[in-house]
Image (cartoon, rainbow, N blue to C red; front, side, top):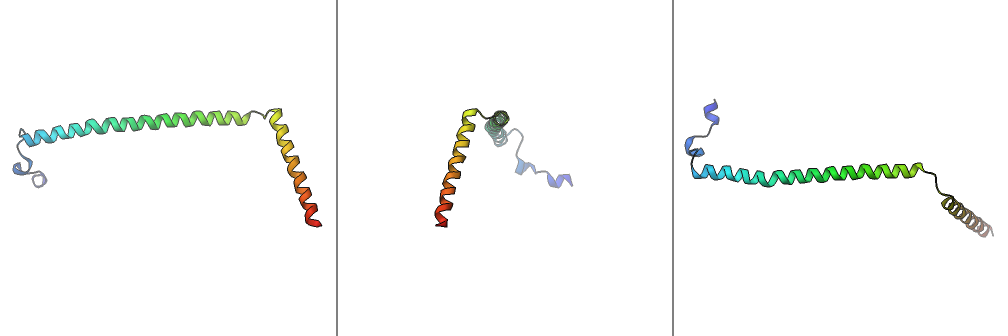
Length: 95
């Protein structure tokens, strides 16, 4: 059964022929291009993962800190202005 699966010497060629040597060199050249490319992609993915973790840590630390008094006052001032405008609009709609 294995004899049927193996290539005959005419198809395969002699082990020391120029075609076989060229095929072996071609495989090595392709590996020489593909392996560094895959390693580069892996390093880029790793650096993106590290940056994402660092950014997530900074965002969670920032959300745990209380707001400053100035930003809280400006927020309250903004909500007061919104309520005043909506109250005036309600009065305008009634008339």
